[in-house]
Length: 232
Image (cartoon, rainbow, N blue to C red; front, top):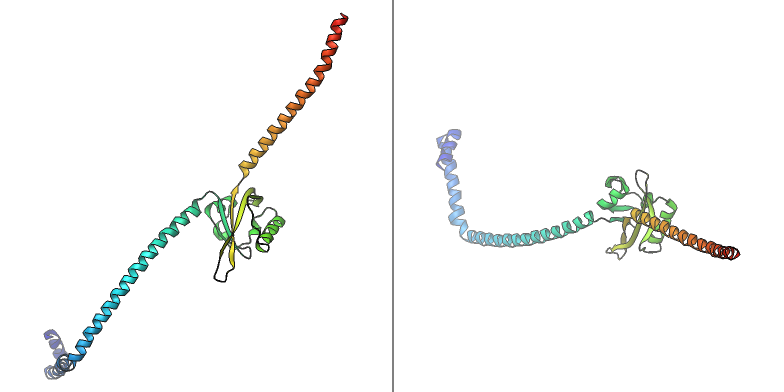
């Protein structure tokens, strides 16, 4: 207060400073000792109410923060599973537009997420007609597939044989489905294995046929040999 009084004196002069300071002291006394007894108590009560409200708000905030952290852990856990699983996971909306692809799915088709998200899923099928047929069965007939095989076309125009299954993607508040989930995997090695088995089966069949022919040939030769020995 003393420093404030000195500053006022320097600006307005001693006389005006004393007058201004006297008015300020008088107003301060009125506030503290004349008007304040009731208002001061009310103010203190109001402060206590505010403090209690702030305390409850802080507790609610801590609870919400704890729940958010728990949900974040669950989200990151499921995100880690989806992104690191070896199978491709792809989702489309009810218009056939791609809304999500996990890391494995993107690697299989060779696209980046920005390049393929928002595109029609028919773009990925090697045979557009087959892709349109599958999409029609999924969206209009609500027919789900289990271990069906088809071929995709990667970004570098390579054919990718896959086996896939589908399921509906949950319902929204209007009790309608939000989309369809595709789960698929590359079956190139399986197809190669199948071809090897088919070749082995063909070779086995040819071996059996050759053995039968040799047997049939040996039978008359044995008779001829016996007859020749008798004649000798």
